Image 1 (cartoon, rainbow, N blue to C red):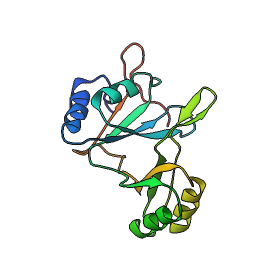
Image 2 (tube, helix red, strand yellow; image 1 turned 90 degrees about the horizontal axis):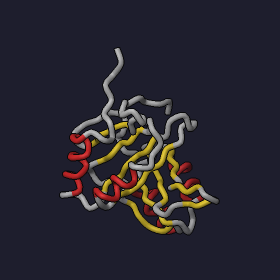
Image 3 (tube, rainbow, N blue to C red; image 1 turned 90 degrees about the vertical axis):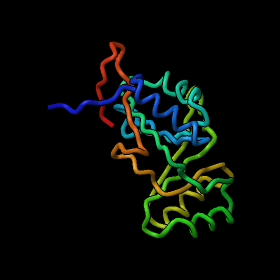
Image 4 (cartoon, rainbow, N blue to C red; image 1 turned 45 degrees about the horizontal axis):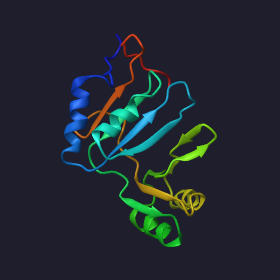
Length: 167
C-alpha cells in the first residue's frame, strides 16, 4: 500500500501556512529536490504570498517542508565574534544547520547555500567557509515527521497527481 501524500495545492496545507503567518513574521521552508543527488535548500519567507510564489516554479515532485516555530535564531555576518557566539549557543554533539540568507548566483543558477554537522569543529569549519556572509544558524529543524509545527507537501505533476521523487 502506498502512503498518501499532500499536494502543495491542497487547501488545508495552504490554509495552515497562511494561518502561521498571522502569528509568525517568518517561516523557514525546506525544499528537497527530486532526483538531484540529495540537493535541498532552506529558504525563509516573510509572507504567505511570497511563499506561494516561491512554490509555484518548483519542479514537480519537489518536497516542501514548512516549520511553524522560529528556526535558526543566530543571525548575522560571519566573523570571529559570530563564530564564538554560535559555538557558545550550540551544544557540542548537537546537529546544526547553517543557511546563507543571501542567494548565491552562478550564471543562470541561484541558491541559498547551506551546510550542517554535529561537532564544534565542523561548526567552526563551516562558518569559516561562510566568513563575511549573512547567515542563519541553529539546531537542525525536525523535518522528518509532520506535526502541529511541521507540515509537508509535494509539488504535483502536471496532471495534478502527487508522486514523490527520490530525494
